Amino acid sequence: MNLWKKKAGNNGSASVEAVLVVPVFLFAMTAFISICNMIALKGVIYEAAIETAEYMAEYAYLAEKYPQDAEVGTGIYASEKINEYLDAPDMTERYVENGTNGISLLGSRFPDEDGYIVLRVKYRTALNIPFICSLTKDYEENIRQKAYLGYKKEENGSTEKEEVYVYVAENGTVYHSSRLCSYLAPNIRVSAKEAASARGYGPCEYCGDAAGNTVYITGEGERYHSTQNCSRLRRTVYRKKLSETGGMPPCQRCH
Image (cartoon, rainbow, N blue to C red; front, side, top):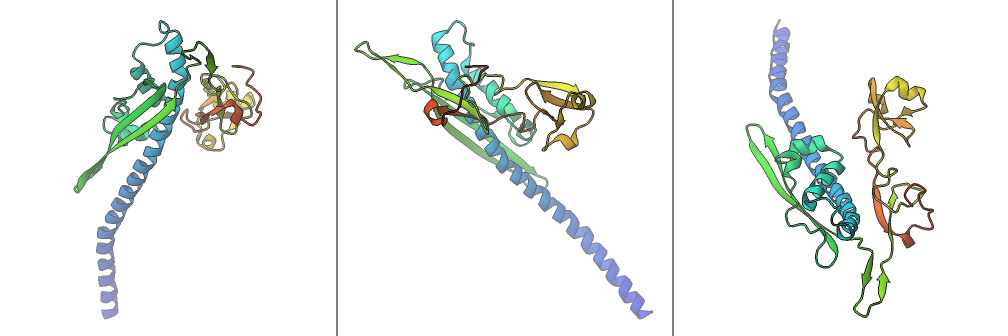
C-alpha cells in the first residue's frame, strides 16, 4: 500500500512538472524559429535588392535614351520591382513593420551623377514575444551598380564603347542581352495537375509533392509546382561582362 502511494505521488509530481516545462519549451522553440526566420529574411531582402539594382541598371538606358517612353516615378517602379523579386513575401509581411510597404528606398539614385544605380534599402523588423517584450531592429543595405548607358562621347569627339554586360541564369548554358528575356522571367501559368501531367510535366523535386489539384507551370519548363513562389520558378540571374561568360552562346530569343 505504501509503495502504491509513493508511486502515485511521483506520478502527480511528474504531471505538474510536465505542465510547467512543456509550455516553456514550446515557447522557447517558437521564439528561436522566429529569430531564425528574421535572420533568413535579411538574406531574402538583400537578394531582391541585388536583382532590383541589376534590373534598374538596364532600365536606366531606356530612361536616358527614350525618356518619353520611360515610366514616370522611377523610385516607385524600383519599389514595385523589389517586391516582385522577394522570394518570401509572406515572411516579409510577418516580420517587417508595415510588410512590403515598410521597405523604403528613400535616398536611392537611378542613376547618380557618376552613372551608378545607388540603391538604399531600409526596413525595420519586429518580433512580438507575448508577455515579455517586442524586439525591433533597423536594417539598411547599400548597393551600388554601374548603370548600362551605352556609348559615352569624350570631349575630343571620339566615342568609347563600354564593355558589354549580359545576363546569365544560375546553371544556364546561354547568355542573354536583356534582363527582360522570357527565359529569365518565365510566364507562370495555372493548370490542373491532371492536365499538366498529361502534357508531360513532372512534379518539382522541391515542392511537387505538396501539389493539390491546381499547379503552376511555365511554357519552357518540364515540372509543375505547388506554389508560384517556388525558388525554381524564380531564377537567380547574374549580370556579367560578356568576356566573363566563358564563350557561352547567345540566347536565340533575345539576342
